[in-house]
Image (cartoon, rainbow, N blue to C red; front, side):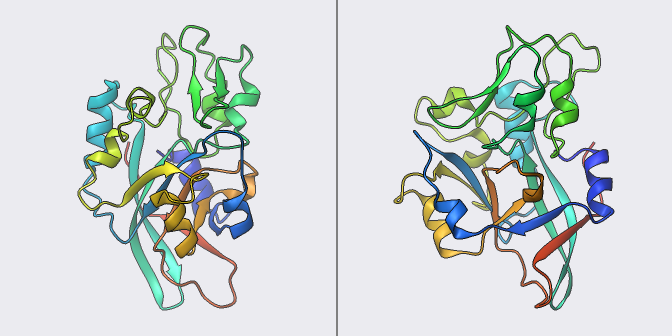
Amino acid sequence: MLDRRSILKMAAGSAMLTLIPSAQLQAKTPGKRLAMVFDVRRCTGCLSCTVSCAMENQTDAGRCRTRVNQAAIDTATGFATLAVPNQCNQCDNPACVYVCPVEATYKREEDGIVVINHDECIHCQLCVDACPYGARRKDETLNSPPEKCNFCIHRTSAGLLPACVETCIGEARNFGDLNDPNSKVSQLVRDNKVYAMLAAEGTKPNIFYIGLPEQPQDKQILSLNFIEWQR
């Protein structure tokens, strides 16, 4: 879901995928801490996640909630091209919440999902500009609230998986509660090097990436240069 502004920012070298300290991943929060872990080794770039999300949530054309970008990554052995899924990061410190003048965007205490109250939203679109991930898709007519991922809250509340996870043919998407040590996402972050996007923004995202190629020894971060984007 990275928009053109965000991608150009990344291409300029100011945005990165950053290795996350294990202490931050293991930090307990009240209630559930719902998260997704993307294994980029298994993502084929088929876009079944984007299609199933649009169908499940009945989003307007051009306002899908999850996208897959193709990225070139500088690794220890040369450049690698990866399919990198991106969507709302359900941040613990969400910039979108702080700019909403009517508190229509908020973070649920029980599970950490950042949601939009469509009845309270005044369509000002301030949250669209505030999100560093380009994860909110605005209504150009300003007649409707922005679109963004909410982990298919209507499905997860009923014990189902988000549509994108259920339809991922490569099983690259994993969903669960990081506060549950027995969940698959907890096992994945425990057993792998885990990265988050734009961690330097201080948003404390809950979308994580594993399976990235080894980085050069003299670098602490993997920079992303996106070579194309989905409009």
